[in-house]
Each structure stands twice: as C-alpha cells, then as structure tokens.
Length: 303
Image (tube, rainbow, N blue to C red):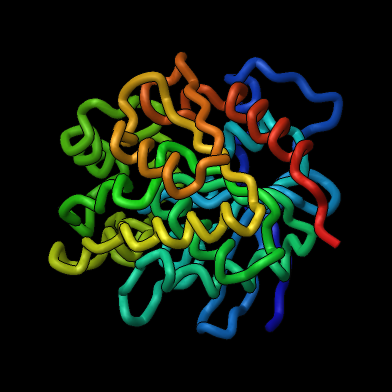
C-alpha cells in the first residue's frame, strides 16, 4: 500500500468564499489538501485532510456526492479531519464490478483510514457513507471509537434514483437537470454538486465524476442494506457509542426505524437539529460541528 499527498490546482479556490458565507473568521487561513492512497482491493481512494495535525475525525458522504460535501462542517469544526471520497465517487477510482454496497466499500475505506488517520476516534457518515461506517466499524474493531450517523439507519438510506443523462452540453445543463429531478433540494446544494461532481470530458461535454451517474438505471440500486441492523447492534454491544443526528423536518428516519434503534442499540443517542430542513451538514453546519466536537471530546482515545 502506498500513499501520496498532492494539492490540486484551484480545486479549493471556493473554500475562502464558503468560510465567509458561514460568517466565520480565522486568524490562520484554513488548510485543506487532497490525498490519495493505493488500496489492496484495487485502485486508489482519495480524500481531503482538513487542518494541521493528525485527524481523529473521519467524514463519509452520501451516494452521488464526494468529500467536498463536508466543506461547510469541516470549516465550522476547525479541528483536523479527514473527508474521504467513497470508491466510485469524487477522485477515488470506480469499482470494476460497479457494485457499491456498503460492505463492498468498507475494506477500501478501512485501508484509507489506517493510512491517513490511524488515530481515528469518530467516524461520521450520511446515507451510503453512514452504512459504510457501520460495516467499517464492526469489521475493524478498534479502528473507530465512536460512530455518528446523520439521518440514516439501515433500511432508510434512499436508493439512488434513475441515472438520467450521462453527458451534458454544459455545467448549466447539468444543473438544470438536477433542479428538475430534485425540486425540493436547496439551490445552493445543487450548485455545489455540479461544481464539485461534474467534470469536463475530452469532447467538451460534461459528465458525473461518480460511477453511479454513468451506470445504466438497472445497475443503480441496492445501496441500502437492512441486514446492517445486526451490525449496528454488534457495534453498540462492543462498547462503541452511537449518535444519530436527525433534521427537524424533511428527514429520512421514521418512527419504526428509531424504535428499532432503541431495541438494537438501547444506549444510542438521538439528537434532533430542529432548525434543519433536511440536510444538516448543509443547512446547519455549525450546529453539526458542535455535536461532532462534543461527541469527539467524550469519546475515548485508542490504545
């Protein structure tokens, strides 16, 4: 296994604007670096190292997004953190088999965490990233000491919708398509998705960096895994604290899923961010950062 560290030219030119938009001031400008690691399972995993010093917090994004989905909470957190691109997303290599089930992704993510953040204490995830975090934690005892699941439990992570066009004439066309297919999503979120997840091809067209946006519709499902209920029960029984963060409205979690959590992991905490209208890390990054920081401080370090 080998790793390297490279800063992509201009990739982070928008970070200063994001910081300003959050109303945050820093005596020292925020630092973020793009990194890659080759993994035994094939190809490489990429990610972003935020801040100076060893990261103890790992951030895993939802399907069809990337490590850049965590820019806002990472800036608000102001602690060393590692945001990873799941395999098949962002700058990580696509899987040859096109299979992106959580258990399939966990081994590569475990390698990346060991390489980039061997002192990890807390893993935070949403959607596909949250389910991968569950599989990761139970299969690698001691790799993470605490688990934060954002608006996700097994059986609640919505599968990826039909792929739609795989190529667009421009970024604006891609944004128009996203707005049509996600009419209730915040416009700023969709603009971020196009800015970070669309890439220009050699022929001048634009396509998605994530593999899911390039697969036929019949290959786009099966990302959720309800059998991970057994895994989350094992995580909790093993003494790993679990925190579930849910929005005040527009979330995925249902009463039955929360009841199941109480049965499987009776010690798990559930926090509702009342001000959030659906995507906590986007519309309430400062509040989420506070929750992560508090959970991190209460989570014991590894040996």
